[in-house]
Length: 315
Image 1: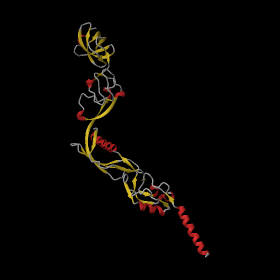
Image 2 (image 1 turned 90 degrees about the horizontal axis):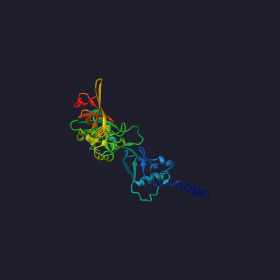
Image 3 (image 1 turned 90 degrees about the vertical axis):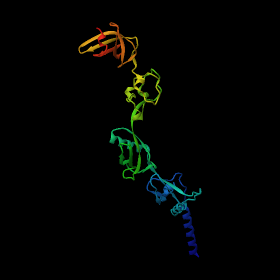
Image 4 (image 1 turned 180 degrees about the vertical axis):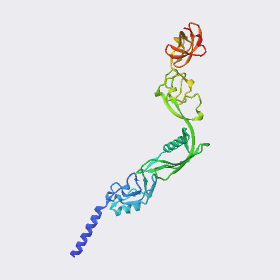
């Protein structure tokens, strides 16, 4: 009788201990695996020492896998975790954490390869990128170009890009187009306003749209004044701007003609406005003849030796 009572007490104590050990758990809001396996700690916050118990292999980076909730509950129960599945989850979906290789990264790699091959800047249009490219978060190194083929005649290309060194490559293809970087204005400039460096942005245009009169250097814009109202984000042509006026029409200037050691000077009147470095017309007040001279700065102009009209400048 005493032995029977002792056994009953022992069983009751064991049941109570088992009930005490079972820990209620709930699923995390976001189920993510950071490595190649899925563990109980990936699903439950308070899994404790049971958190390292394996449930399944993780999917490829950036992908997801669905587990049977009954399987998850049974594995958890064997480790002393009680998951009631009060929400009636039909499938337990777990994502594999990943670092995404963006389209901009891929195009930048191809553009660099094109520049190395041709010496020209290209814009790339991908036509066959049907899936994202993912890398495990714990891998070292970024994406790499495994192979690259480019047809210079058609500008079609085909490339293989691995998300990380040694990773499985993804094949992409598309077409490249030669482009030019062109300075544009980032705001509307009124006629007569002076353009500053803060007014300039850059855009890329197909080379076949970049005509000879389009300004290609920032120095061709900064410090210049608008000859007419200029619209933002559009290429500026050389005849749209001019240097700031330093000699105004009707202004008297010192006109200098220098050839070799000989320097002649005369007083002249400007027949038109002129900026520094521009050729404009002047009338020599001594000879009353018109000459074309180079504006050197406020109140100064010079006639280059051998130019038409130079002989009209008198000492």
